[in-house]
Length: 464
Figure 1 (cartoon, rainbow, N blue to C red):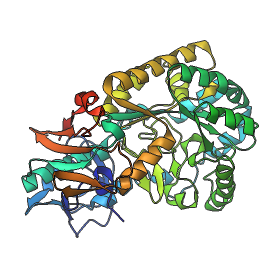
Figure 2 (figure 1 turned 120 degrees about the horizontal axis):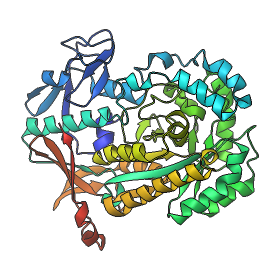
Figure 3 (figure 1 turned 180 degrees about the horizontal axis):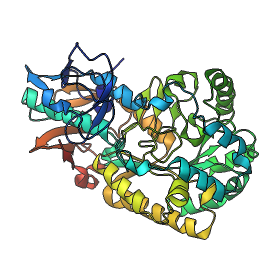
Figure 4 (figure 1 turned 90 degrees about the vertical axis):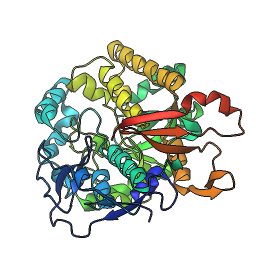
């Protein structure tokens, strides 16, 4: 199995040589790496912290560069997996539901939105005091890997390290829209929502609930696809009990998998973004969309701390990297795009994935719909002015799987991409510019696109 580092950058073999200390602490805990990465795991040397606080030790100070290698005081794969699978989120490590969530979901169907909003605000009280993951976007994984890239450049004294760029055609980032259809009213609004999306040239994925909530007819699904949008399975019945126990999960997932085949979709998202990644081997889907980047305002706290897709076994995780519309409107009482804009700014600086959840159920009213249309304006502006790829979950899944099979190998005229099944792939070069990692993307040559992609050539990341 390839390392998470290799899957992230797709650089040549041995371009980044990592050596990890063998004598790691028995217990896992928190530490920082550089200025902007909070990590959880075991390490050698200075002790780890029990909680994520400002007094955590900086493990970057313990890195040793020797003979072209980067010696880390921790196991890189272990630390990355702890973030991807949210191993630090102790409340959810055993897969049990919150004690409070069980009675809540029993009465939830009877509660008006105002009552649900009040109970959710009480439950989420103090969210803004949480220091980790970092609100409104946590890029700990991305910052860690960038800093290791910088160490590798210093260790080898290389001018640059080539790698396969994250997105096709040299796009500087990616944006995708998803719609979780929760109620009969939301289902009835889907046609209007597709009209709105289409007016902006945005194609979305509609997550439909197979049982109990509303009728999922073949005509409904066919209309979504006929108009160029996508379909994914959204839980089984969205009652909040999918992860109540392992036995119940296995029983329900068998039905969910059948619905995936029936609906001809490779995508899944759990209700309420509940998740237990160590059980994902039961899912018969190519990609999942249930893991938030930072989950301070979700019932299940945690977050994967990356703005890039990543693999959990054979499943591609396409993380939710921005705030949900319901949370924005009903929990924060914010009817603007301010938070979305701040999140997309941070994600864009990391050349990452901007993924959105906007429910048809919560943008029916005029006020909310206007805010959503402002968000669509912003997304289109990012596409046109910042070279952000407007994509869909299935397209991201297809691209990321192709990219995972590509390798950089030396050729007669320099580096070339081996096993390249997609002509949109681009080679990029990572260089140090002071304390910043700078990415330069090589345009495809010869290509009619070369002239149009000159403005894509340089991408600067944050300080390392």
